[in-house]
Figure 1 (cartoon, protein in one colour):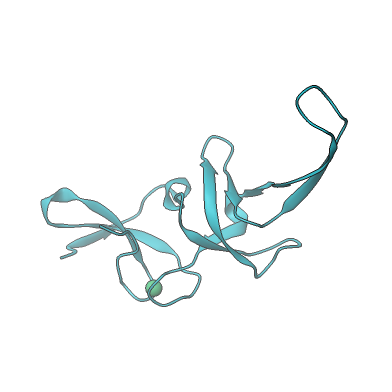
Figure 2 (cartoon, rainbow, N blue to C red):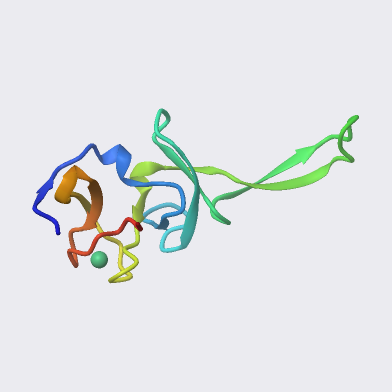
Length: 115
Ligand SMILES: [Zn+2]
């Protein structure tokens, strides 16, 4: 199994499909699934969190009204929730036999990535 744990760039630790918890701001303590990661902006879009309402005027392609949409959150404000210990966890990188790199929960030591 895992032979060594190395440090990896923090930015790469959150991936699409991860469950994250919000650490600060108005959505603090809420959890959601990551829909999109924007590494260049250091931001993530999380399902049903940080909903922003946009008022749109009627146009050719829409009837106008209020559109609800997920807004982005700063990567530094969210933390991945470990599927094994169900707690917000810092992730390390474990290098498996054959050189595969998997993310590992530093709290319980389990591999977070599937497959
Ligand atoms: Zn864990």
